[in-house]
Image (cartoon, rainbow, N blue to C red; front, top):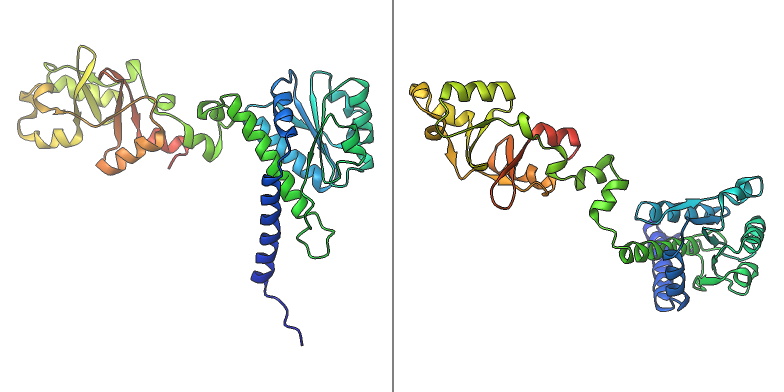
Length: 319
């Protein structure tokens, strides 16, 4: 009696088949890939992606990845395109159509629209000699590899390869455009991704919000400044540069004769600081390591620029 494979065995088989197909795709990456990237770099409008069924889901994913990495892109459903949404596709755009067989009939109207208005067309298909391949200006062929489902019918290997090819296009465009972390943040202001990329300067307090005193400031006035600004610290500055800080700990250490001192006599010199363009996650690390709740930001020459409090970091969603 034949023993049924375990779920783990099936999973390993699937991953093996798909991994081998990805290697095949890498090794057989066509010369047209460079042509496709150069075409997309020069598009004045958007990159329009379309496909039916599972190919459509992958097309939508590729469009989203491109849009978030500096290449304006949009998914258009082929069925909706035939009922008015062709108007979303202009002569300033470029098309990427996905069809494993190359014969997806729902793409016919989009292909005809591309020809009518001379819209550049890239086809992703396993059958370069099919209808899509023949009508496309450039073809990115998928590897002739078996689907991982075991019956050769469910889109598995083909969709994995298509998604990987879309990632390759998006990343190539991203890098050639010089798209950096700062640009990425502009498209991801919310959620974990946005929080991870926020810098100190994005949330720090500046100007009149800063609790600032000088070396000769009486401690009575220093306490008023600390209370008014509400951060539990004060910056000791000289000619605009941060030379010390006064914290609750400094107040406690000098409690016996606190009011007989000035700010310079109570402050701790050489305080922990951070650069304004440092990531908030780095500021949080400094705070945790030194068990402090506020951190002054200074520029390269030590000039005070701002203050970031742990509450600012928590509100930003970093912790």
